[in-house]
Length: 433
Image (cartoon, rainbow, N blue to C red; front, side):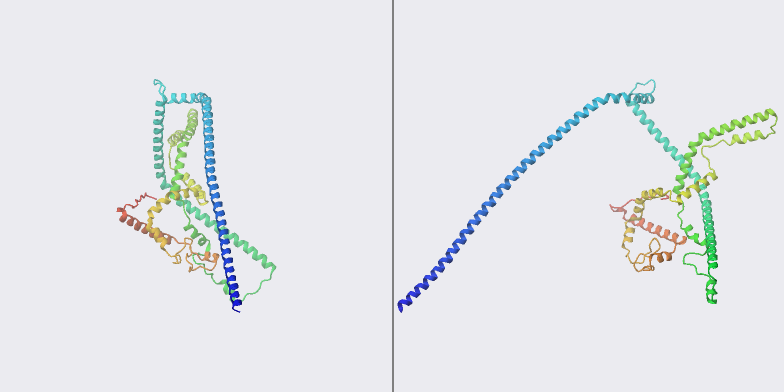
């Protein structure tokens, strides 16, 4: 029995040893395989690094060779262009000289005197002097034209007031005629409907309701005069700079047409003198021909004159063009030029005040409605809101202009206070801006 137990202990020890040997063998095999895989991956990475390095070298080589090739092509094309231009210049230079010779000859003969030697430098200097003299003469002519325009401005303003009175009267007459035609058409339609349908008797309350005076809408007066009153007051009239433009063109036309007018007057004078001589020779003259000749001789046309009828005609024509939108480009160009000056005159402080106003402060929109969400006409529809908008009156416009002037004066005072700082702005204002 002891022998058997010892044998069993030995067998158990052998099994334990075998298990330990198997686990150690597996560990060694795993370490060996991991090492082999690591070495293979390391070799692969080294090989890829070498390939990347060689590719970088090849890329640099190809890039340098391509740059060299392109540079050579550019130099080659530049040399070809230079050669072509030199050939073209050498070929066409005699032709250009031959074509320019008559012009240069006439220019030198015009600018140089007879006793002077022909020199292109002296001819060009004299030509420059003549150009400067011509420019100064044109400036003097322009100044004189503006002086004539300033003389005609009083007549223009008088004619403009009369033209606007006629314009408003024509509009009122047209509105009355349109209302009358519409009333006649409605009466005709009512008659046609009355013939087809029998008339129904109205109750006393309905008759009183029809006969009651209708309440006019807010901001609109009844009658054709009231319909055109507000648009006439708020209409943008022709500004003074348009008067200067039109009168300047009128002065230019008078100066250009002066020789033709003098020639026509001389022809008429010649015919009248011949007719007067014939009457004196025949003895039919009773003293009337001499007086007529004297009056006609005194009526010699002038270069610049003021004719109220002509100015009135100009006012009517250009006023119609202005109100039809024919001078929109002149107005926009003037606003574009003066916009920078307006911004500088308003100043940064006024712009900041406008930007600091809250969006729902109930400020009025330039079109007449309210800006904020809590406005009076919000949520009632665009058409209903437009009907409720009141047109600003003349007193309201004057009050707004006075408030804007006060704000501009305050801005100018603020700018004068901050004038000592290096970032101060100098405001340049012109009269009538």
